[in-house]
Image (cartoon, rainbow, N blue to C red; front, side, top):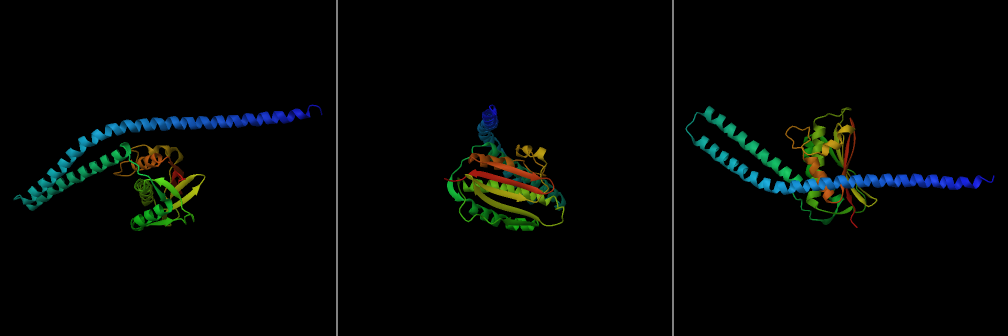
Length: 275
């Protein structure tokens, strides 16, 4: 009986040790995350400096190529050539213009990912952003056979200090990516694919969920989808998701992903709540 009181201090010491180990592990995870973010920021800064000069050097020649191709097309149509011969030449010139335009689009995507990003913040309500996004993509989703939904939003405003245009673009990148994934994979139950926006607010964070019923992403591939130029889409640049994540991080937030192969994915833009 005399030794009984020693049990309490021993239990307390064990509990304190476990708590200290948990806090230490948490801080280590935070430190590793901070180091990774700092390395990514440094890499983006270097790319930004390089890309500004690169853009100028490439854009002007591409514009010259398009202008001369258009002039050449007019000359071909005015030349005394057989119709079959002129039609073949015009097709080749048109293909040249299309490919040049595609190069300009790729350059624009690269600049958006690697260039300097100007963020004009204002107080906005995520509920309004959700309504605008659904209205904008409703016709395109219907044409693709996808049911576009907006989950009932919270009763009060979900306010964030953000650049409205950039935030919409990040969400649109996620929504278009989801629509493309669903378009190439019918539902296993034979039903209609759905794309849902859901807005949440809590614990000082505002969240915009983009939820689809597509094929999902295997766990070992989720980290890689945010790498530049990683894409499974024909003709895609592989910069849509990296740009969306960069926009979220420029606002002090991030993009979270939860996906189940065969059931769908939930891409969540998470931002600090205003105030």
